[in-house]
Image (cartoon, rainbow, N blue to C red; front, side):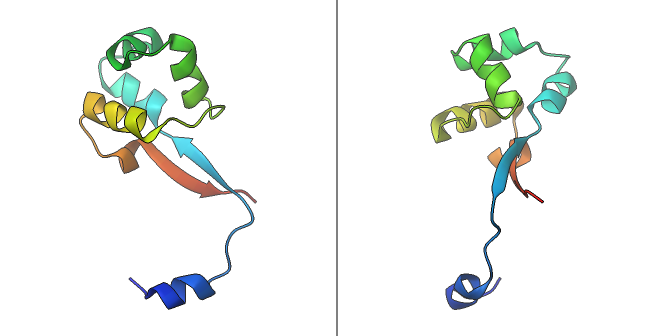
Length: 84
């Protein structure tokens, strides 16, 4: 891992997009529906759908709750992808 100075020198990507593996994780966990996940997270199905489809970024608290449900790290659910 480089120093902070090296990090600051690197060109920053113009845009990065938050992507996720929620759909895959739902199906790996017994083909869990969006509604079932929403109930476990205490949010609406529409919220789960919006996050899954990249229309809404979850709060840190909600991302951590998802990680608990899927028994994984937040980084296994969400990742950044540079736009071309």
